[in-house]
Image 1 (cartoon, rainbow, N blue to C red):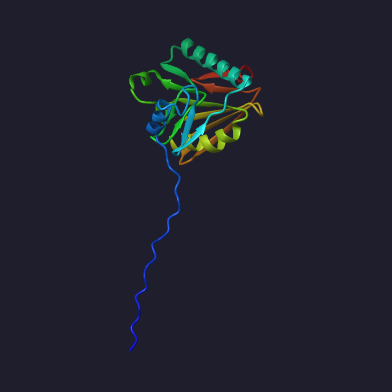
Image 2 (cartoon, rainbow, N blue to C red; image 1 turned 60 degrees about the horizontal axis):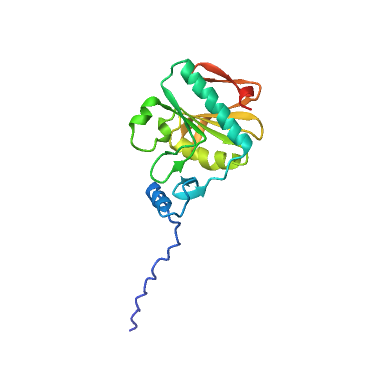
Length: 195
């Protein structure tokens, strides 16, 4: 009578997994001098991305938008503030630096980094970063329930307006040409003043 030898189970092999960073890890790396204070690092799903320096046209467009938005807010005595290239987040693994974010004034009462859903409007000025802004950052803004995102597309001289976030997508996309106007706070902004 033969006896069957029990087969040994081989341990299941696991693939290496990428390490996911948090905002606190990033803060400690800055404190340790791994990143210089002037270097802006975005976290997308726990992965760090170093922002590339902006060019002159990009800088000039951000300045124009800042002036237009602040003028509109002050003329109408609206309770909003304009934040330029400052951090915004969804959670501990997603930290972005939009070119511009417009918040209600009470954002200053919070001690933490503002959340994407707190912003009334988020603007990315895109030239060399167009693919990154559309394919990498935009899904994070949708996931964070951004109310409205503009991509100022300097390659094609158009404004891409995204609203109605759902999952990692926006249900509504509207394209404005350089000779058109876009509404904000019930006022028309001429895109020719931006491009």
